Length: 547
Image (cartoon, rainbow, N blue to C red; front, side):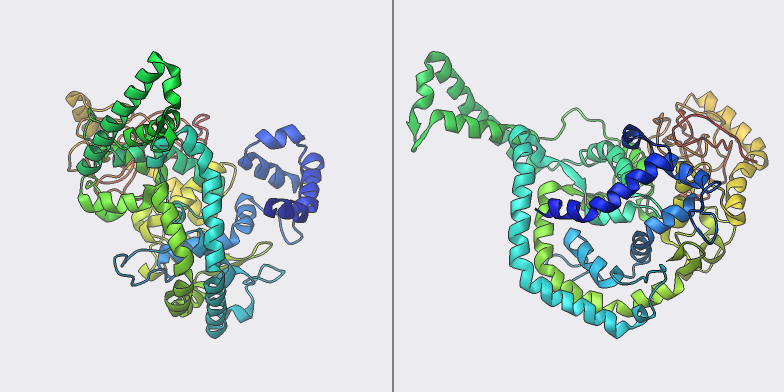
């Protein structure tokens, strides 16, 4: 019913969009289903040569995306700066960040709904802290009254959505997925949701393998015991069927044997899915490096400590069992009123202050978050390659803005950044000549040691053991000290931009290098700056050099 109602509301805009794509962008209905988003944006930018899309000025790729993701970029900035109050002092869950779908919807209604006027400028009334708190408290009361009905709806939706999958794949009960909080934490500025989904989907397999490095002995023993018992009963049922199939209809405790056989088959498949891999190779640092290659997320206290129990626990809070995420979603329905009333209301002044401090106006675009504008003059972090080192309170944490900038440039290679952005890109290439002698020396020592795979230009000089670098789809190609096991290299995949797992004291991306094209990055020694910058397009091919 809800989907039909949305279709009725959106039908007219969808038909107008279809006509625009058919007539203005020269895209057929079949092309619309297969064309990539960057190509659509490139056509819109090219269209401005003959058609005035914006009256004020010609829009580039960044302007178009910034208009689409205006609210999302503000939310990303608030989460990155720790502005939103999302923690409750609940016994047993202290320090837990309550960011589920339910809480996300409430934040959208409380903070962003009505934030902008028709000209995409922030309304002056938004800066009224008292009014913001009043909206949050109204929503808290509404959530409290509707929470029983929302819980029933969520339960029915979960059962209908997952019953068929669980019936055909009982082992899926032990599958994991990224939490809503992790999804927003790992998303980058000006990154459309499908690009985020692609990155996290690519990181799912190495993330599962990383978590599998630390199996719970108790869970494995219980799962093996259940598998043994249930498997024995299933074998008896199969033997009865071979002797005489009428025995399957014999009643046991009021149910026929066929019913018990179906139940035992489901339990057997589910329990086997919880048994840890026996002949696994323990290499958590290398697997973490593969995950980081897609997520671009590596806090300082994770570096070279992927085997640490605290790192494992923090990672598992981001990458949880589906059943656990559902329980959290159900609990958040009843916790949302208290979150809105207490910590969110307490953070209202910080929210307003963030919007004041991190807002910039662009002609033809309106007000946008200045972090998403890639304003290096105001928010640059020299540790991550920015040409300007701004004050710490103004910078994004963990170089999120700098990472987002390079990812955006990889997705939209025709986009021309401003002077500070071009300076950052050119500085990457400049390190090749300045570090050439040291790179060549380390490369000879590296090759002599016979370590790694995919080393192309050598390794960076400096202290430290050899590690793993993960290649990928854009920016740079080089050997660099990465994460993990000594003397190993990992060959990256073609495709979307991926960041190499970091070393000890390099420049940026959590001290990470970036893979390029279809080559992987090898293992090296060290600290310092970049080597051999080769910029590639996001598809993994079509290399082109930049000065």
